[in-house]
Image (cartoon, helix red, strand yellow):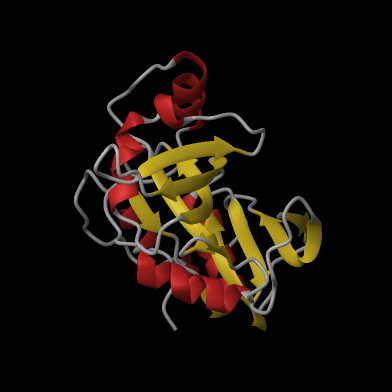
Length: 222
């Protein structure tokens, strides 16, 4: 499912607002595999390319998701030391297999299948609630948080932290595969345009989890 661009950030009680790093959009397919003795993971990008072998550090995702078979929607990022997107490192990894000191992270924000059944007709709020129940977060798998109502505050923080933008998704939205819909709105960030006072003070976090460190600096709690 694809978003339509919005002219400006906005507040809304009907939308969930989520930060976006600007990584590679990827579907994660996790299925039981009795022959291997553990679930099987397949990572497929929005062009249909199988990225599983290029991202071996994400293999552990298969053991972190319950209610299988399941399909997650999210983005793969390679963060820099402070948690922002290292686009060059990600491109090099997916193009040439180059590895750096930073490792990829899968940021999950939606759930399409669970327990072997499609749930795309359910509203976003219900899909997100179920996603939170079946995912066990770890360094390589982060459940991307969202906030209802306070889209302007989140956009302000995202712009100041140098992230790519904010996605506004209607809480009652079904998942419409392959369609671009106004139920999802994309607000691209223009770094530096918002006042610094809107950004919370930095929070200490383990250096090997820079994405989580950055999330802790965003206003994502009601």
